[in-house]
Amino acid sequence: MLEGVEFSVASGTALVLRGANGIGKTTLLRTLAGLQEPLAGRIEVPREDLIYASHADGVKAALSVEENLAFWAEVYGRPLDGAVFGTFDLEDLRGRLAGTLSAGQKRRLGLARLGVADRRIWLLDEPTVSLDRASVAAFEGVLRAHLAAGGSVIIATHIDLLGEAEVLELEPFRAAVMPETADEAFL
Amino acid sequence: MKALFLRDLRLAIRAGGGFGLGLAFFLIVVVLVPFGVGPETEVLRRIAPGILWVAALLAALLTLDRIFALDWEDGSLALLATSPLPLEAVALVKAAAHWVTTGVPLAVAAPVLGILLSLDGSVAPVLLISLLIGTLGLSVIGTFGAALTVGLRRGGLLLSLLVLPLYVPTLIFGAEAVRRAGDGQPFGTPLLLLGGITLGACALLPFASAAVLRINLKASA
Image: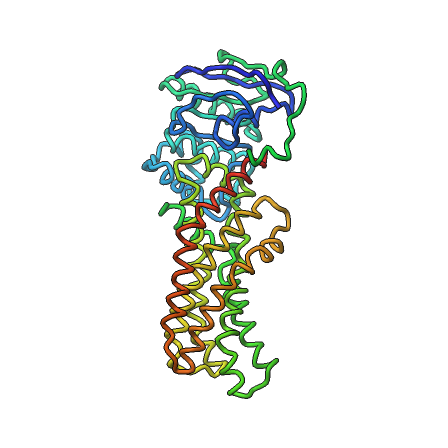
């Protein structure tokens, strides 16, 4: 889908991916996350420092907010830090079943996974979808704090987030010919 | 890994998890058989091992598609794949959780249902052990089938077609062990072979499941 994309992200900095729908922002992020392999080229990322947040939140409706986060904390081998509920404004929702949350609350729960996992490099795919303005501002604060702590963020978004961050416009890298997708899965 | 196991158990038991579905199906099928076959004790006793085993196998099949489908739909599977857990472990843990929520209840219920089919009381321990060993194999093999069909809409039917032929050896040795026990013959050999199949499946299939999951995850964008 994309061709000739080249970038590097230093610790403490963010990169914002921009481009029209369907250009390949998600594909690029999935490739960085290791879910897909690039057709050509090289990726140098420390896999053990990555965490990927997709369109879907991966929230289990039958588990409570706290159980959802406790699960991810244990998967990432971290103790569940109570502060994360405050950071993502989930304090009042701790005991609620995730299935009863609104779309925005669910999204906050999905993003709170970033807070419990304690990884350096965040790959975020449209993280602000269905968040209200206050939540977006709060999440921007979380991102800034992460960057200030030496982390990095690669984020695909359509809104103005992290105004000071470097922007990578993907339009110039659109591949001239779409690659054969039928065999792609088996490469 | 423990976290994933406990989460899957919790999800299976809570609303909409499908816990008990397989068990209820098993009960109904076995109870239906005497109605269809007639009440002659001798006939029922002879077909009991086969009926119990086939019913248990079909009951285990019912909930297979849930192993990965739910995690696939809500995106957890992709997040798990990028987490520190190896996908091989994810496949094995999910198979184990499926066994505990489906296979173990079936195995425990089977001796009770054996009474309905006039199965001798002395056969009950062999029935229990053979089902405990066998259903673990069924869960691991089924997990592989579930991994293969995970991205497909209405993959349940295809899953059955793929998995049922792979269940044949388990069925043969499992039912044979119970039959021999009922006839008072030594039943060690079929039980050992059953254990061999299960252990082989546990050792090899999680790797195959992880490989097909990776391919399915790649294809979904």
